[in-house]
Image (cartoon, rainbow, N blue to C red; front, side, top):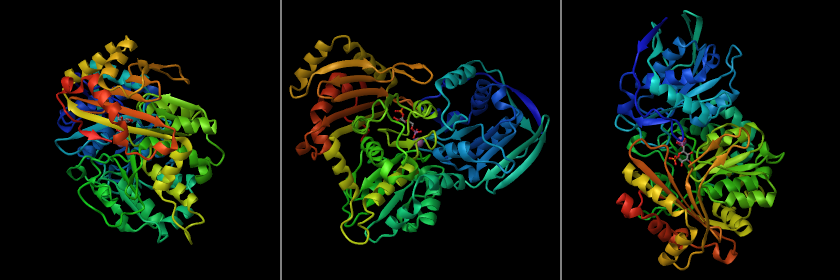
Length: 580
Ligand code: VG1
Ligand code: CO
């Protein structure tokens, strides 16, 4: 092949959000749109990190992925990349990409230097829905803000990109290495099995035989819903072929370009089938739900964990995993280096960290902030309220890892029960945790796709209110007299303890005297309008009060949040799109 230079002009709005660039497919398929972003990324990385590089290119298989893989491969070749690694059919979950970057060794001894991940995660897919792309670094984690800001800057001034001419489209359906000759030497395309490296890593972390024993026990039953995302590929291999789960326990595990028309977002609203199977549907009654159920998002980095007729909040999930990891998961048997959560995530993890005397960090939303802590050996387990849980085995959140972590805890708690005695259930484990550490009642209200102007005004209004806490308390007392006082309010700001970088405007917080919190943020992953997220939390230590319905017990704070923010006035919405 030879290298062709193509003239181009900048597109507006190519700023990577919380997790890469996400736009409607119709935006991405405009001539030069994807190319500009990819070239801007290569330019931001610099010649040293591009010439001779080994790049992973794959994703969640959503519509436009196959075309994008061909374009990126040709641009990589033209930019002097030495090898492109592609998961079979272009399918790799986001955590699998991270694992491949960190662990895989090519037939010629090569190691990956970075990755383009093609996904818009939990956003719907198809010709009229979303596509997305993000770059991950050599540590397997998302590019830090220093790089993403540079990428964005480059997109505003870009004049040309380079692409290989004469390089044929690669067949991504069959594994194997193809070699091509370019002006600067050889260029290889290596199509490899999507699951084997990831599986190997999972086997080195968890005790597979004990999970297998649990899954094969007649007392236990299991269900996994991939919502037609890429996790289905890995799930079949790991849960069915390796761990012996019944094939019928997999739901929606065949990846589809449009996720079957659904929202591949594992929450109580969008994971409808699983929610019904687990006996949690309000309209359908299920006579005998499985003991354990889980769902993934489109790119497989999120997880929702359910017990029989029981929902585990993601904030509780990470706290429970951290509290049990050393006993139940071989990888952590030497102890935890520290734990971390994103700011809006409930403080359930803080309490565990305190009890176990662990280092603890609170970071802004988005996984990239955890990576630095992990690289510095300061954090082993971390999580977000948005169904993201993970550890330092990779540098992304990891949906299947979280399921294996829960299965490990269940296997550990039931190691003497599988023969005789009652099964310790998911619900038992959560209630026991609340009894020990107290319970953080928690809910999140999402107002999706609201008018961007109105959303901005709402946020500005909340910031302005913060100048007088007395005034805020006066307003709040006028709304409900039964909530405690606000003692502090601010916009969350984070100084990275490793590299000293500062991230500002990371969400508006109202902190109450009794430990309750209200947090308001604008989403950074949407592709249209604005999405407002409202996070509401209340801590209850009194063990006689930990068994209430969470919406009931949070009702006073919800009322305060909606009225204080003038939600309806600014958004025109009388109810949120999704309640978690
Ligand atoms: C959301 C979540 C955040 C998560 C991010 C990426 O971001 O709130 O916790 O890290 O999605 O998840 P935002 O800015 O929309 O609130 V995923 O599964 O897209 O990689
Ligand atoms: Co995701």
